[in-house]
Image (cartoon, rainbow over all chains, first blue to last red; front, top):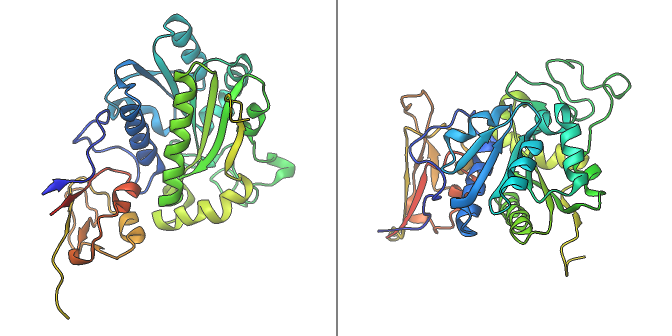
Length: 250
Length: 74
């Protein structure tokens, strides 16, 4: 018997993740480990973790990972990359971390065009704290702090932070993808590969927004939450390449 | 109906499976099913049912958030 799918080299084996069943984090973690192996970056990679559900990702990745203060992932990544330009640095942040408390760091690191990668997991709620309103929560979506649905007059509109930073001249590659089935997962892997290559080639800032299911806080089954990403979330956050300033791709 | 030979084997780490049923829902040939039994964590884990239908497309391994599925060529 021959094994068809080898275990990702930079993903720890035999560790049960703390994520809920059907969470998109596990899939994106595996993709990150696979891409680092394919591009042969694992030996010089440093990941920067957020506060949020992915706070314990250092238990699952088998390369160096640093834990950041809430929202300050891109600031820490800037420091690492500027002091050790030979290393490969990426941040892995959720929507509460990147687009709520860390908006300033995200916008200014993108505006400076730092040569780092940002993986932005958008699940439209605060997952770890129990499903409160996030800046990315959809209009009329029920959360524990908006039990009647998000009212734009009171709570504002969903924040499209990736569209905001994609306008900056320093942002070389920005794409929005969705973990909503096998095709979406393949596209996510391709997008993360492009982003990682952008940094390896020294071109500048890249951000990948991943629309990711949160079955527990959406109160749906894992399979229904995948469908919800396609049917509801992708209407508010359309997937696709937002900017691509790599040479030869414009 | 003659039974075709099993060309691929799907091996699931049942103790690490969290029973999210994504592999069952996305398998194009409906090879997997939800177990009647529970694992130690209390989840109905996924298990292969009609392996002779498996084409080795690896979609189950693609959607599995826990990396518990291994597919072998016979």
